[in-house]
Image 1 (cartoon, rainbow, N blue to C red):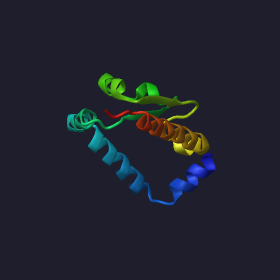
Image 2 (tube, rainbow, N blue to C red; image 1 turned 90 degrees about the horizontal axis):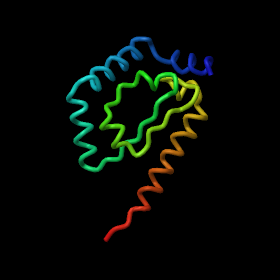
Image 3 (spheres, rainbow, N blue to C red; image 1 turned 180 degrees about the vertical axis):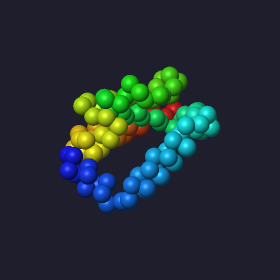
Length: 111
């Protein structure tokens, strides 16, 4: 997995990775971001949370977001880069979350 992660990251300059990380922090580190999330939840958008076990404790997710989440999954034995640390497990976990979302959507009755 380490060799695979190195190969993935080696296909771009370090400045790209740094710019991406900076952009994520700039976009998600403000109260405006949480206001946007709240507005989407209030409009009925489904929220699904996925974190790696080794990074979940430091994940600063407000309680109201956790309460609104349809699922809050912690992937075992992984950190922030779950998809590189355990690509098969990551895909399996995301697929299970998607299957759950589909089942929930079809279980809704109208009228």
